[in-house]
Amino acid sequence: MMSFSARTAATQLSSSRMPAQNNNRQKGNVRCQATPLRFAKYQGLGNDFILIDNRHQASPVLTPEQAARMCDRNFGIGGDGVIFALPPVGDTDLTMRIYNSDGSEPEMCGNGIRCLARFVADIDTAADSTQYKIHTLAGLIQPAMRPDGQVRVDMGEPILSAAQVPTTLQSTRAEDGAVIAQKLDVAGKTWLMTCVSMGNPHAVTYTADEVPIDLDSLDLSTIGPLFENNAAFPAKTNTEFVQILSPSHVRMIVWERGAGRTLACGTGACATVVAGVLEGKVERTCRVDLPGGPLLIEWNEQDNRIYMTGPAERVFGGDLAGSYLE
Image 1 (spheres, rainbow, N blue to C red):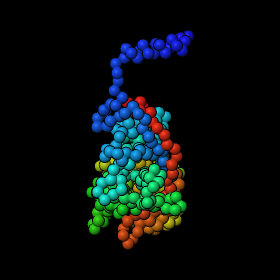
Image 2 (cartoon, one colour):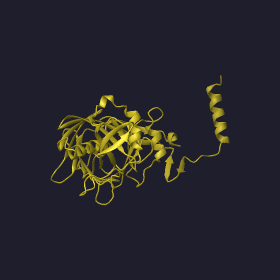
Image 3 (cartoon, one colour):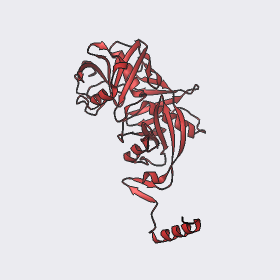
Image 4 (tube, helix red, strand yellow):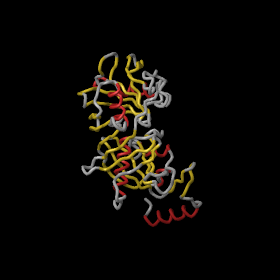
């Protein structure tokens, strides 16, 4: 066995023979440094995200591939996505970008934006306001922290036009191009689909083979990808399967585009209520129970905007070794 002093001398000798290495390496448009990367882990109803304060530069400090690696639950931190707090655009407070666990980039994430609002409130403790105007690829989203710890988010207006969702399913309403309860054959069943965009595409179904859906009998891992990648959805889609408990209370499970089965989806809960109202099944204010817990959704008739209220909390934080990203 080599003694400590011998090992030290050998290490010094070996190091003296090695060429100097640059600890700052360029990968594409992203500068990867050997210094640790500060992160925080947040979750909203079990939908969990890695949050990074990226407000010092306009582009994410990570590539999509690096973000996917960080989301790995065995070899990384683990998460449904990585969210970056970027500098503001125009008359906003900050910009949100997100990479899914597969490296794809969605337009927005409802649970994620609640986590982002909580993250910024936690690190900017001296700020006067706990309401934010956040620029996203889906447009302006405005979350506000409530005294009870919940986050209420103005999600904007739903988009119903088939071309804008987008979907190739036939429009059923001439005035706005909405697709309401249209038939789609998947996995040997005929599903009635209502399509909604909350800045990202959603296909919502309450009915299969002319009977209400029983969520406990669904094989989500099998049918989820069949909807996500169906030709009826040119940009792929998030899919919500819904069971009605009462006109003001539903239960929903989701297959998310780029993330698969998740415990919750905020934009999906919003789309669920919009679809239910359009089909005449639920009220405009409705509790949506997801595997991770409930969200309260309101589709305001006066301003046509969707309001989502739910939790977001910090789980832990730390520094990711710079060498992990090389």
